[in-house]
Image (tube, rainbow, N blue to C red; front, side):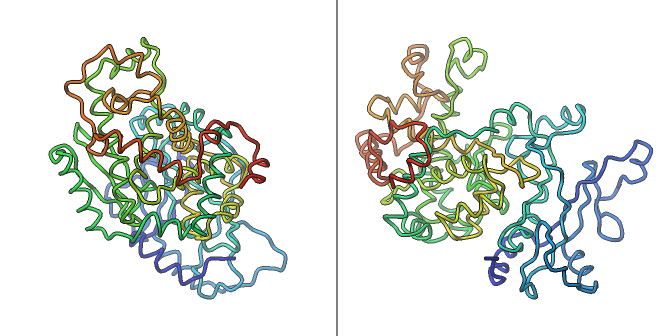
Length: 465
């Protein structure tokens, strides 16, 4: 069923004033490059901008105006094309048709090695954000029965190592992922109810900023971390360091009251403090880590952060970690539109389903074929492993020793001092902390037996709701 038009104003209001259509163009010869280069950022007369990325950007308003002048003709009966408009499209936004690219599972990468060298400093998350995200989002949400397959274009190259590392989905904890989702639906009735119970009311921008600054003040980090709100952040929040200064980027919309505390525990209380503590130890150097034969920091890092996201909540549902794990598993087998329909088993909100599909399809150009970006499976995997071994983990050392796997605690704790390390205030009372880990287990219908199940067949999961 296509998206109702009355949902579009709220969608458009959240986007930037000027929506752009981004079309990848062929690379010009050296002799013609100089002719088309622009010295002024204002662009040419018709409002089109060109850049050294060989990307043409046209304001969406210009597209709509041009299309309104054309004579509308009905498509022949039985005609098929990707991104078909709804039958009742009088009130729908007319969007340009997209020429499908040849099917490819490869993530976008530069045509030349010089381009790779030039842009290698771009972070993985920035390289995964489609340059034409907004127009493809509108095309998808306006398509008949949501059958359009987005065609993403990327400004920056995606490292081959990342492409290889995150191109395969795991089924190791698919049983637990589906179990958590079904348990939540059984208890609360729907995804919307899960959001309302676990999240509370939606916060305004000034409330988000104020809550973040208050948390930073309470943790005595006022001179260490800045807060920035972003309209187009794909994740809810992201902690980065720029020239030694910590910067907490938070998405300016869709943040709920009860989620805010967990978000801050996740980004600052876990990621930031473990990074800070890591600098106090010999294994801050990657060569030293290799010499010590230390395990990768994940899934421990993101698993711990995921548990801290729901810690102390009355309804500590691991919904987000579970749905991301499940969606990634399914994305490896389904196209974008097929995955969107499949997620309808757990949620009906089109915008929520779009967000999850986008996360697990990042880095892919033609989404009409199966493929996934599997990094998001690490949240549930890490959380379940920590819960499984919770009785044996020294959680204070897990924070104080920095960016390490919990399996390395006993191997490296004698190699360093803890004098200059810090732990977040919510972890100081370990008895209370451990009690809340048990509360997370109960809130998701998990037992020690379920935690030890691995690589269970999906069909078996269907028989065990």
